Length: 425
Ligand SMILES: CCCCCCCCCCCCCCCCCC(=O)SCCNC(=O)CCNC(=O)[C@H](O)C(C)(C)COP(=O)(O)OP(=O)(O)OC[C@H]1O[C@@H](n2cnc3c(N)ncnc32)[C@H](O)[C@@H]1OP(=O)(O)O
Ligand SMILES: NC(=O)C1=CN([C@@H]2O[C@H](COP(=O)(O)OP(=O)(O)OC[C@H]3O[C@@H](n4cnc5c(N)ncnc54)[C@H](OP(=O)(O)O)[C@@H]3O)[C@@H](O)[C@H]2O)C=CC1
Image (cartoon, rainbow, N blue to C red; front, side, top):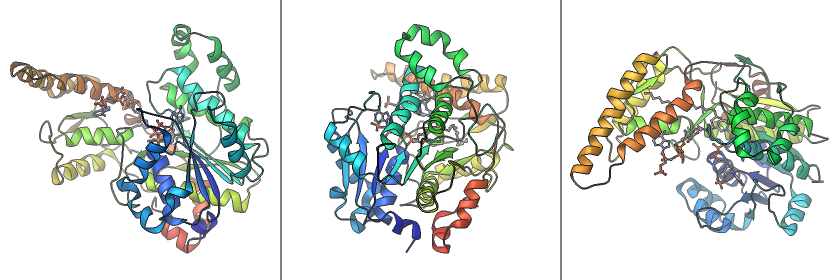
């Protein structure tokens, strides 16, 4: 049996963001490979008129958890959904639940974040910085805590070209940003946000960098590690290939390509696109949790979960593969036959956006209108074009990430764990 899977046996684990893309895969892997774990606490907010319990029930009954039900039939007893809202300063967790979390938790995986590139700075600071600070304070009051694993992003320092597995100082003190968000009104924040964010491309990456500084400043005597995944895509192998449940990162663009919506994408074929499957990120996350708890390194470690220097994939390879796949497995109700190509400058991008994206949508909506149906394609195409403009920063340039710590960790794994967990090489 895997040493890492055995380690999580009997453990009480707290996951934030467990209802998210990565959190679900993390939870699934834990229940499937360590069914004798004691409990997984998940902080869940009520959403779309569903109670936390109803949301958990829906997740456990989804296709992603089919294998879990076979190996961990008592999964419903082992998951504890705790009603919480990380937007609230005390997370709006009841006293009883707080007491149970503080006295029982052995491992914390902090995945929760707002990952939207266009989020308001106040909301991004609250979730990606202040909530992290609050969770670290809670963690410092957990007598049984063995490791605290913070999920950041490889793009938290995207203002640099070469990024090492270290924490880079931010130009702004996180505590001052948190305090100012408490009394500035939205109009003032909108005014100063571009100056505060500086040479970061958006509030998301900026607040993820601030979050890392908070982890460093508030680490106290905690046993902490930070994991920085690059662009996280669908599952590669576990629990089955191709699972994804949102349109973020590459997912929305691949789906838009398959639906014949996307016909032109600004990218340079030789440029490397750093994508990692979500199950690989989760495998590294669990390995880091084990390593930090068992080997107890003397300092906080940062792990890059990137593929660019281990198994690079460039646009010239990714594009044709995506097109071949969506042609082999066509999407239902596609707008057009999938076909896309790269543009390499602003002029051709504007031209193809007009000719291949906006004009066909307008014509299609006119036909819908003529036949008494509600036009919808122009709105969707505008959303896609806006999504592309927001991710363009990450597509039109490349970065170099060192992976010394990640490779060192891989060398510490048993042969069984190395077989299961390393696929970046
Ligand atoms: C030919 C080659 C092909 C190559 C394939 C490979 C592609 C690789 C692409 C690389 C991307 C790089 C990402 C960089 C990641 C950085 C690392 C991280 O940490 S990132 C961490 C992860 N973070 C991110 O990735 C953040 C990126 N995403 C965002 O910031 C926001 O989603 C948004 C601002 C882009 C769109 O906001 P907004 O406009 O408000 O849209 P909402 O979200 O609210 O959805 C509203 C409606 O629109 C619909 N819809 C949405 N998107 C698409 C789409 N692409 N399409 C179609 N439809 C789309 C959606 O269904 C919904 O419909 P309905 O429910 O109303 O019916
Ligand atoms: N996806 C990617 O490409 C990458 C992601 N990452 C990092 O991985 C982590 C997980 O990302 P991902 O799974 O994609 O993100 P998702 O948006 O899928 O999940 C975010 C999670 O955070 C929770 N959350 C958000 N706001 C609150 C709140 N106010 N109270 C309680 N919970 C809240 C969400 O809960 P709810 O379901 O209620 O909304 C959800 O569970 C993030 O830290 C992100 O920065 C890093 C690199 C790349």
